[in-house]
Length: 126
Image (cartoon, rainbow, N blue to C red; front, side):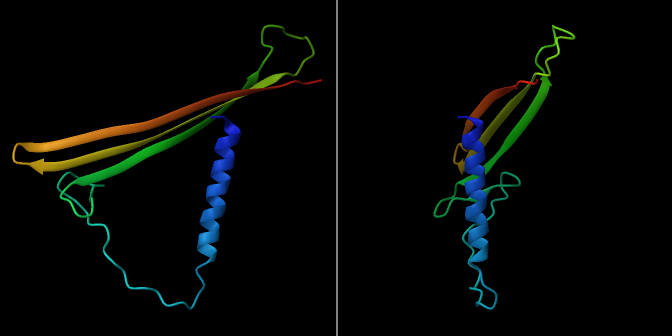
């Protein structure tokens, strides 16, 4: 996965979200709220019941992005080049934590999906 695909995916997601918000015209009747998700406070904050079961689920995660720029030719002082390098690093993860109470105690299932990417660009000066 390279930085171009990450940036294009982010841009596409933002365009879809903004188009969905633009479709809500003022003056339309707002439908009545339906309680699809029930909060499960047995195992702490962030859990909700999976519909039709007594199992509680927590979905969490993070996304990090870092850009580092530095001089590329540090070992040759005064060579006249203004070369520098830019490094991009991104990582993301999503955690799923499912818990339910059984007659033997708490049953827990946990898994994590993670990915990371690193890319660098050399910019040559005059």
